[in-house]
Figure 1 (cartoon, one colour):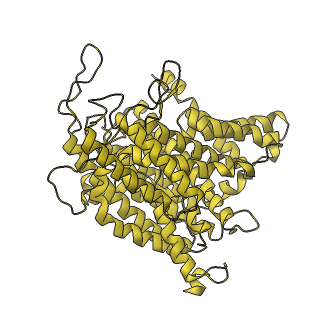
Figure 2 (figure 1 turned 30 degrees about the vertical axis):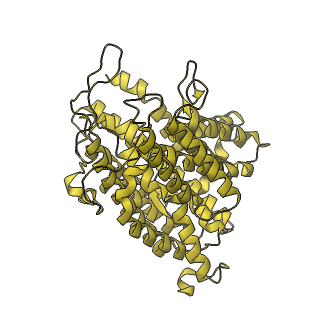
Length: 498
């Protein structure tokens, strides 16, 4: 085992690997609660949830003269769907983290990717059925796997400047923090652009729960409490359950300003306490060809969506594995981690698995840095994390208790962790500092990882071109720039085609 994982040569021990693997799990276990809120509560173009159950009692929903929806939301269907997504999320995270430990032998765990799942839920599913949306993720994963096997993905990693790699991670961090603030209702659309809470104040019990959990998590993080994120979610959920039992707050449909934003913290009546593994029967849910039609315009749209998924997944992973390597001093002289090819292969297969089993694209997690900070240095820690995820499958029915207000503080802190890497960018070198700035700011401002990365790469290439350094820039970056340019011009292209 020591020779296989190189435990001693990397300055670690069995105890450190075991502890680090548990810390990584505790740091990212929130995804079991968060992924169902994102994936499991959104309807596709037919008004159906990812489980195939309808979200509304009537489709399309009916609105009154004031613009308020009067169609009933089927809460029981949402609760059942969330437990399905939670169980599948834990299973796939467990299996793929095990593979990362055995094949990649790197202390990084895998689970459903944040940002990617939001893009699928809010950007793709409303355009097609959930089966078709997940089918696109499968195709995206297959394409990336091919790129890994041809060593193209590793070549792109080597072509991207260090500062831009770091900027990707920092931008994703800000984006994740913003998602947390919005999901909790701490930041809302106001009279201008955005405002704090309700009219600039903290009003309503759910918002107060968010603030209390966030402050508690910050205090625990400052004191380096192991498993602080999971503790915050559990404590916040208990507090939310008590608040709901006493105050009867209700959801945001009944109380738009002061209700629970995404999930009411109460146990659903009836139902089984065993994990619901229905989504693992992928042959009943996935549609690999349904999104493709004879219409040329539809083909272009599908290709654009796959490209967006691929670019986001591609560069998210690149920034994450380098950041983990820097945290544990694991990078080689070329700036890449050992066994890069194997790490990228497992990560690519995780995207395929995430699509097949309806959990959204699975990818490497930056939260693994917490386990590495605690001493993990090898793939053995990933195996520990994977096994713990598999055990966690049996508590997934409790996910229906967890409101977004209890999970959102974790996203804010994760954003802080990723933002810390900003000091690694050479801000005096304007050739990379300006593109890095656009990457970091545009991800949260446009609510899109892909847009932020694309603008950053295009601006970087423009600067190189006007400075007469185009020939010294990797041809691969020019290919990427052209792909992003096509992506940004898809509106003009589609209008021209029509």
